[in-house]
Every structure is written in C-alpha cells, then in structure tokens.
Length: 281
Image 1 (cartoon, rainbow, N blue to C red):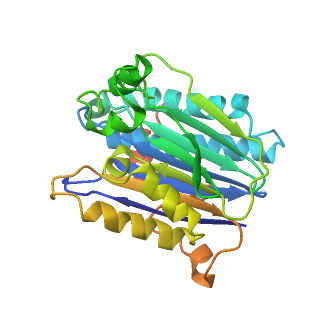
Image 2: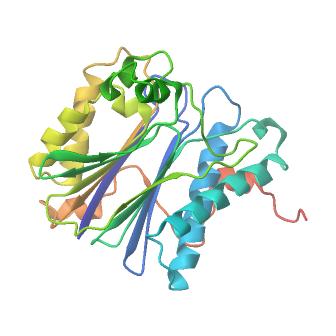
C-alpha cells in the first residue's frame, strides 16, 4: 500500500505557480509536481497543462498494457507535456513565455520510475537514509559538477534558481530518468519537493523523518513546520508530496491526499481549458 499526502502553497507570493496531482489506474500510481518559472508570464498555466498531459498519456499507456515504469514511457509522457505547452502558446498570447519544471514518479508499489527536468527534486529514502536524489538542471548544479561547491550548498548558491533545462522552452530536453527496481518495502519513502520547499528543509531532516516510520501526512506536516519556522514571509511557493510505502499509521492517512489534486481521467484543468479553447482547428 502506498500512503500519499502532499501540500502546495503560495508561501509569501501573491499566487501559487506550483501545482501537483496524483492518479491511480489499474494498480499504477503517478504523482507529478510542476513549478512554473516566476520570471516568465503564463508559467502557472504551463504547469497545469503539463500535469494534465502527462497523466493523460500515462493513463492511455496503462490501459494499453504498456510498461509505464520504463524510461521510454516516462520520456514519452514528458515530451507530450512539452508539446502540449507549445500548442497552448499558439492559442493564448500572454502565455507565450510559459515554462515549468517537472518531477514525475510512477510506482506499482513494488518499484518506481522517476523523471525530472529543472530543479523540482525527487528523493528516495530507505531505512532512514538517502538512497537517491535527482540532479538539478541549474547553474548551481553545474558548479557542483565542476567541484566548486558541495551538493548541499546548492541552496545557498547565486545560480540556484537559474535553470538550464525546463519544459515548454523552444527545444525539448529529455528528462533525467532513474529506475528503482525494488523491491520497495515498508518504511521506504519517496519525496517530491519544489525548490521553495527544499531550500528550507534539509535532506538530513527528511531522512530523519523518513526513519521514524511516520505516515505521509504526519511526515509532510512536520517538515512544513520546520520550513515555516525559517521563512521571513517573502518565501517562494512550496510543494512537497510524500509517498510512504507500507501500511499507513492511521486510517485517515490513506484517505486524505492533502491539497494536491486527485486527477480524474476525463477532467481538464481550468488552465488547460483556457489555453486550448474548443472549436479551434
């Protein structure tokens, strides 16, 4: 059983350009988080379109019986999102610059597949220890690659929010893919976090919470308390989603997804409906 809980909040900003959603079809669960680039108009719309298109593509592939925990399937879904954003830009003038990060997790409860572009991260914790952390696509990550700073210093670097890869830009960049072949076991934790969250909550703190065997809601809300104690009211939007594997600690944990959207197969977000009006050829 996978216990999922997430939050997505505006922080100290006027509105929230982060968005998140989850979907379960035929025993496969997908969770996706996008963080629209604040400097580019319409990026909140880009994020909503990306989520809808990724989940629609994955649902289609699941129903067809395809292996959605594969690099091919994840890359196809992310590329579909990228193309949908570009198509939307043709319909809506003030959306022309919209771009977004994306972090996608697909799991069948036994293994998991991860795709990322930008600096929205996915973490995997096992036995209370960090087993995997996705790479950022940023100038700060490039400084890490050159040996100039340590990975944990990215959050303090001037290039932390200067991204080198996103979706919705002129050229598609394939996502980074990581496969957890498993087996996932009780106590394992996957965590998706936008930069507005991981800037203030450290990996060591996430690992400590993961090692306590908490249900997803208790874990996320506890980490959010740390964040709120460190911000000055001018902080960025922040999103965090936990996927805790094993039986939930409380009956309510599995029923309450937090304020992330539980995506339904035939729904269309308001942003996508606005960007893709009906009747246009």
